[in-house]
Amino acid sequence: MAAKHGLLLVGIGMGDIHSMTTSALNAVQNADLRILESYTAKWNDDDILKLKETVGEFEYALRPDIENPDKILAQCQEKSVAVMVIGDPMQATTHVDLLLRAEELEIPYKVYHGISITNLATGISGLSNYRFGRPTTLTYAYGGWIATSPLEVISVNLQLNLHTLVLFDLDPTGLGTGNMQPMLPIDARKVMYQMLEKWQEDSLQEIEEVVDSSFNFKQHSMKQLPENLSQLPVVVCTDLGTTNQSLWRGILGSIEKAPVGNMHCMIIPSRLSEIEEKALNKWAKE
Image 1 (cartoon, rainbow, N blue to C red):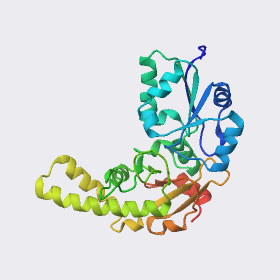
Image 2: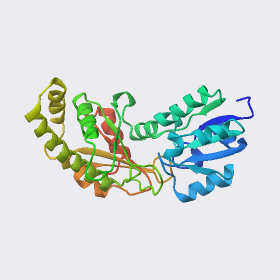
Image 3: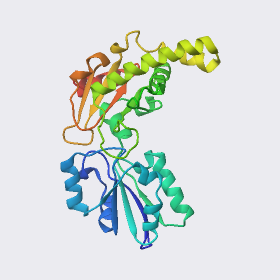
Image 4: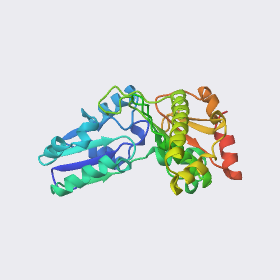
């Protein structure tokens, strides 16, 4: 970016500073102002300290700062501002919107892509990338409400013989304003049980009210799940992109055996090919 002011949207990769590209590192070091977006993913405190020692001091941005970016964009009109995002910045709609707003204001911008959880999880597991369906995110229950759509995504993917990457929520409040508590594997199991219970309650109500083609499709897809959800095969990914990364293979009902780390996600595998089976047997602990 030739201009001396503007927006640098920088993916800093997963796990630690060693996953940053050289161009991303240089861009952040040379920026006038550095901001770490800190609500879509999380590094541990030691790696945050190393990042600060390497690139210089930076501010923190939470969800409201990115969704209502007037302050950031005003700063971009006067200086070069590097907004650092863990993973790849273009994986989130809010970051796409940020770039579009910058363009509307004729603010120069440049994107530095980073290693994301989507390619790390598929790559490290040995499962074929082209056999992954739509990803989904398990969210905490807010009040008495819980989303059931993740369970529907998983079931539809299973019906299509596709694997599912399941990301875990970081924010029990849903506000993105701090006090992040990344979901643990045992939390994910509890959430999935809650989703199934809610889905069954909603299904009974829908049967009484109306039955349409989309409802019938969902009902048929849900039959792809084990009758006892605790028997659902899962692959838990822990701290991908770090020296402590690990894979654990088992069933949902035994997920407490999976290693506990800083950040987790999981894969719901569909029917495995011979190569995929060998890869998981080799690289995932049981």
